[in-house]
Image (cartoon, rainbow, N blue to C red; front, side, top):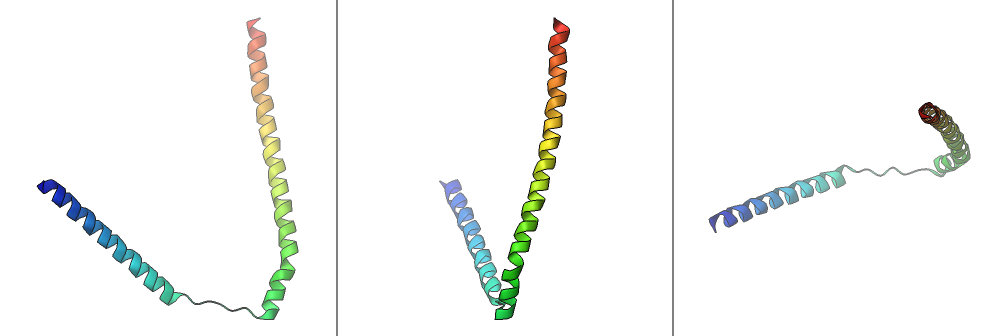
Length: 91
């Protein structure tokens, strides 16, 4: 019975420490936050850069995918050749 009370008090202590830490982080996080406002000119600049950024991202992903597929295909061919040689050697 005594160990259960001790166990419960430890749990309460950990919960209180956790709640206190979360409250502290929440309060200090809100106090430090400063929202930046954007001018209409900055907004138009950002929107005008989107098509170029999307095109660059797509071309980068395309080239990375082609490289990965080439490497994967070469690895598959190498493994398949080894497997084929194993079966041919047994006959």
